[in-house]
Image (cartoon, rainbow, N blue to C red; front, side):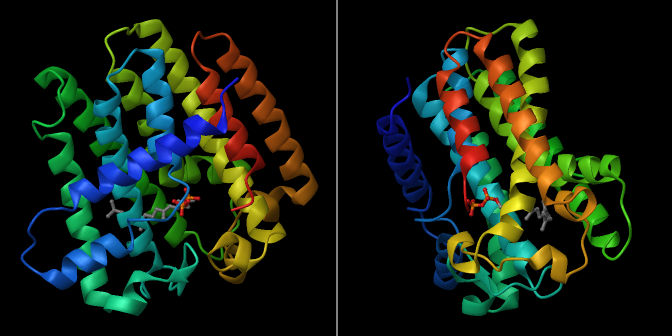
Length: 293
Ligand code: GRG
């Protein structure tokens, strides 16, 4: 059984890797402060944790997957800064503290997001990542696609343009698969790709499982948005409802959403049990399912 020790140690290692990434000169002290403000010492670190967990399946080097996971977390943090801006979700609270633009102003927040975006690819292409050029290129390509027009940005655009409109469950699933699921999936897949004990067959199965984990993450996100308080969430509760956005809860209702999440959780655990060394992935799936923030 995976102990909390693994989780605690991984969180520390992720934090230290991120701190290291920021220990470089920056043309603007304010820009660096703003980047660190939204990246260090906060968040559940779900994406790097999944990257570490799937790397175990292919015997990936721990330092390599820490770097890849940290690059993905940095992308996630940049998307949160942009998402919170007044021209997007206009939110004042994130991870239990004022959002980046509230502290540093809209322009610096926007630029900090841009700089984090760029920094993530600097990490993935750096010599610190001890992988063959082919592997690196494959990983960089996966990440770029996951956050691009057919990934996070595409999904965010659909989400933005569909505010106030009725979506079917399938449309909602597709939108979230892009906006949130694609980066989560990239975390699981790139962790696996980083190792040498690798098979095309397992990769295909991990792709299917990763899609389901992304979906579970989103359904739970929609549920806790209405069942938990702003204090517990660390961000404004009931925000989707206020902004008239379609969610699993608004389309299916709370009980059916909970039932869907429970079924999906069981299904993912059963699929993972078919793979050796998947205990940490199972542990993280539980974490996604049982979380309250
Ligand atoms: C220009 C590439 C680019 C992106 C900008 C703003 C934007 C486009 C995309 C936003 C994507 C987004 C914010 C998706 C929401 C994802 C989500 C559910 C965030 C909460 O994730 P958690 O629960 O948060 O993992 P913590 O704080 O724990 O890290």
